[in-house]
Length: 72
Image 1 (cartoon, rainbow, N blue to C red):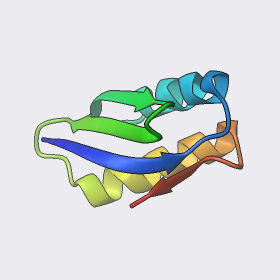
Image 2 (cartoon, one colour):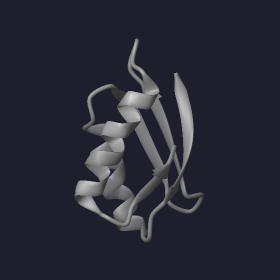
Image 3 (cartoon, rainbow, N blue to C red):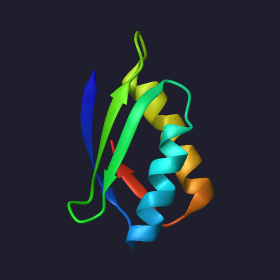
Image 4 (cartoon, rainbow, N blue to C red):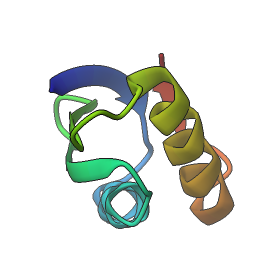
């Protein structure tokens, strides 16, 4: 399942870091951050609960950059 989330990130370098952090999160098959569109497209692994996984993604991304925000 793929879902798109609105995000808030300050720079392209930070967006790359957020993408890497999201892709390391368990339950994520693939995450792509588009800095210009301020969006994150997430493909979840088989049988994963998007709400639970996205809380983990938010937590992992906040460790990298406290200003980053995902609007769930």
